[in-house]
Length: 396
Image (cartoon, rainbow, N blue to C red; front, side, top):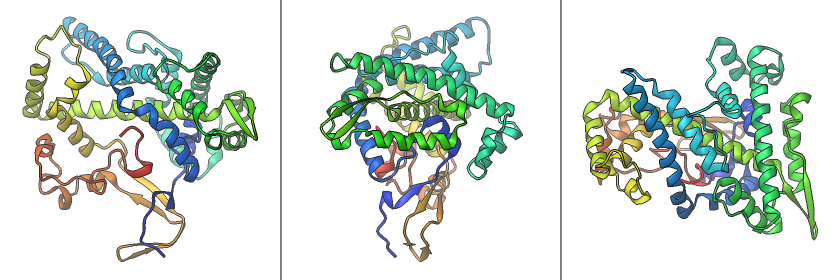
């Protein structure tokens, strides 16, 4: 038994439908494999790289602003912002992630439509049943019913376009370091300079492919990438690897869905609390006095203290992931409780982030001003919208 808790002593539960879409990338990797992938991802989220993303944020949100203004000019007093926000975050992620322009705000796009069919399809009884049972009855996702066929077809489109993006980047990289600062370019550049022992090996690729063989039908196996390898001493270096695809899909899904949902919840909470909305508007007007000149810098965005409070409070009230589970690899003792190894442990993030024992009598209230209190003691033990430690979200 031990009471010394370490991140890699607890494995994440495997969601088979999520793996089918994302691949066995950073979201599901464990141990040394996770450490290596995490190390490979970190440079992409440096302070300087984040700053270079800001013009893209401004460009896409300016398009959103124009579309909403058009709705108002047409006399529409009730505007459903959810699809607009979802398309906005998708366009941003596509651009900063892999220099791909979805343009979903202004036009149709097959990968955007495929992505939408996976994440925004109505949650009917059959779809919910497949999602809940897939981990326990794996073959249920292979039954040829509408829900499964739509999911597989959407995954095929996403994989085909992603494969093309990776192929183009690798071909470009043959002429030297990629100059773009998108995530995909940075990943490829990083993999080229890593020590040989940290590069993705052919055996690792085969292991990943075996996972996909278990999860996909024969028709889906064709979604995987071809492999091109080059020999460097005793190490086989992957020149085009499935692991890059899994990283891209992890970034796309976790970056888009969580940002979109959080933004929508923030707008909803502000609409329910007009006083807080007025305070935020006052702050924004001071920084953007000219509404026609919507061109904030990185430093100006960081100066928006109350906006930061609103975002933090939204993440506290409506955390993107309300519950997570882990499986302990060895016997553990939590306080007075003995937990035998291989137990599935559930952590209710939403519960402790709204616990009155931690946050006081106003725990259930939307109160952005609480974050201005210098005595507020916030740790990963009471506020974890992005988790924490080595298993926390990359870039936080």
